[in-house]
Amino acid sequence: MSKLLLTATAFFLILGVSQTTFSQNRAFDNPVLAGDRPDPTVIKIGKYYYASATSNEWAPLFPIFKSDDLVNWELVNYVFPDGAPDWAKNNFWAPELSYDEEQGKIYAYYTARDKESNRLSVAVASADSPSGMFTDHGPLVAQEYGSIDAFEARDENGKIYVLWKEDGNSKGQKTPIWAQEVNEERTELIGEKHELFRNDQAWEGGLVEGVAIFQKNGYFYATYSARGCCEISCDYVTGVARSKSLLGPWEKYEMNPVLKDNDNWKCAGHGTVVEKDGDLWMLYHAYNKEGSVYVGRQGVLEKIEWTADNWPILANNAGYERSKASLEFSDNFKKRLDPIWQWRVTQDIQYETGKKGLKLQASEENETLGTLLVQGTKSLDYQYEATVIPDGKAAAGLAVIGGANNGFGAPPAGMGISVKGDQLILWETINQKTREIATVTIPSNKQVKLILSMKDGYNMTTSAIVDGETIQVGDTQDVKHLVPWGMGFRLGLVAKGATDSYAHFKEVRIY
Image (cartoon, rainbow, N blue to C red):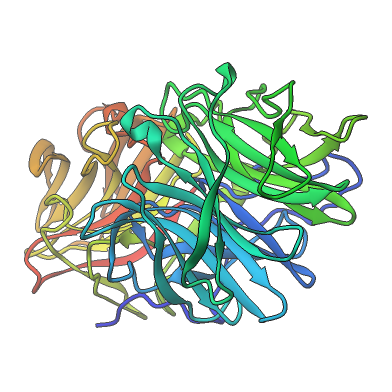
């Protein structure tokens, strides 16, 4: 058996869009990071850009993408390819990359919940290159209400500060943005912390968060998000503030918010600003109005514009131009397990790949769903197929994986189609209880192609092909109730049964 490890040279071309130019604001296809890629961060090292995004509860943690144009990205690494650091248990959010040119090191700040204190904590890891192995340095700060959304910035004197949000909204309190100096090794905060600003304007609602700093025109500028980020009723927006000094005083733009809903995207925010050919661009997340919460928050790129009095603003005209063909995926598992696949951070997943395909060790883990190997959805309408060699021990299946409810931190739940022995089963598992919705008997010892089709993001039908015959399994199922808070659906391979059994998948296709 082998565990999924992403080497420094391994990569997967995530976005196969055509080469484009930046001659005008709309001369490329959004989203540039398709699927659920919340809280994107981006930095430039030499001629290349590197980005990352929130992982939530899916390992490997914190993907690192590489691009030479901010549009075409490939997956080159993970910050934590083996899963969670020992001290952390869940809520793996908001990575923020920073490069120290003098040291030649890349730092990855991130949020996670501490096992002992149960507090949301800001932590940091480092590596000699974006494609290298990261060393975790653990938490830097964990306030009583929680500390999230770190960002590193140097002040006007060259001192390094870490900025973060105190998560007061989780307790009905205000949400200060703090800054505190950090040592050169990024292992300890030093000196006193300073409040930069907090949610004190009506348009900001219950919180401000996701601060990112850049400099121009003699100012430090801060982009920041406000209101509700992450569910069907979200109303996220983005504002900007500026100061001559990193520690303030900070002035908020009187025409905030500068980024809000348009014809294609809603609830936009938590982005990072980076330079490209003399212009500044913001990579942020947003829900596509068509895809909504079923796909998740996708990575959108938009150019920064400037007012006559030197305020950065956005045109709010990002479109959705991605072709559906660019989102297709297939895997026959012959060479390796493609690094796009993920698993629950709480499970030590075991598998084999080779000429015969994938053998995935079964279990009763993940709230009795079984072993899950998943990737995010990227569209509302798709067909998901897997060719399975069934046996009488493990149930091998396809499933839509979400949450037991739409509440924060809900346990995983799902609905799917599996084959075990001579039975095709349409099932739903919620709160460790499995309901068989429909069953069909098929000839034993036959290769089966399982098919899961989705329409409008939540209307699911399941079928199978056995000996050339297409067999419908059950009626159309509405899976809206399974959509998880803060992330889109995952498409999963499922192996359920005793740990001495395996689900055998020959190939998978999503189109």
